[in-house]
Length: 225
Ligand SMILES: *[C@@H]1O[C@H](CO)[C@@H](O)[C@H](O)[C@H]1NC(C)=O
Ligand SMILES: [Cu+2]
Ligand SMILES: [Zn+2]
Image 1 (cartoon, protein in one colour):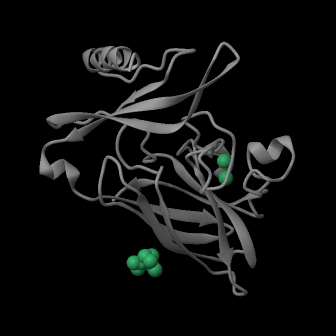
Image 2 (cartoon, protein in one colour; image 1 turned 135 degrees about the horizontal axis):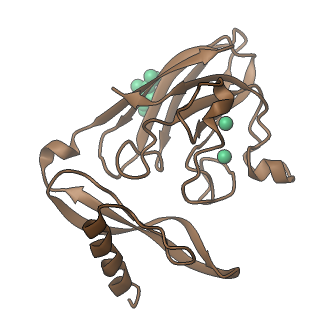
Image 3 (cartoon, helix red, strand yellow; image 1 turned 90 degrees about the vertical axis):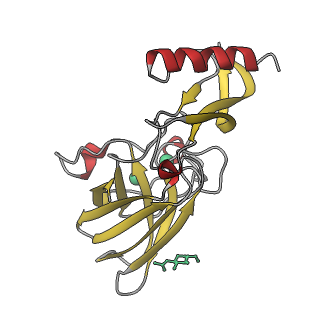
């Protein structure tokens, strides 16, 4: 319980400066921001923290301001238009913000038959094509993994399966993807890969970074809908 006092101090500091601070070598505290009157909850967040290269299995704590105004609890929606060698549209729906899962639904066509890595990448910058989207969205600085793993990038949504005609139906419910707060995926990009994501089980360094999913065959920015 000695953790609670520094947490509240960080919460107050975060409120005072209006930003989520991330002190190096300390427990990372995320403070969700919104413009509504709020109730403060403290949730255990995803991942573990390390200090001074010593293993420290303390949980990262996330401070979430749950709006007390019912309007702010309304369902949030986003949309993505995927372009490239493959094309498609996706909708993202979060029916219980700021926590609660986000449902990602849609259809993608002109893929090669089989499995394709499917991720949220860090940047919504597609000025140089899909490569400008950067690496997997990884705000908690974890290794690459499967969507079922506790240790994973937030952007790790696994694989989608294209049928013999190259058509993939997407219907993913993910607990970490959010459309509100400092870790929102709005403004970032969905990327579909040429090959299968090995989900971190490839036995090499790249597996723990990218899942060896190969080139980028489609991408699109996640926008408000
Ligand atoms: C996705 O799955 C949910 C739950 O099984 C279902 O209600 C929904 O209709 C599905 N969406 C699509 C586009 O098939
Ligand atoms: Cu990717
Ligand atoms: Zn990843």
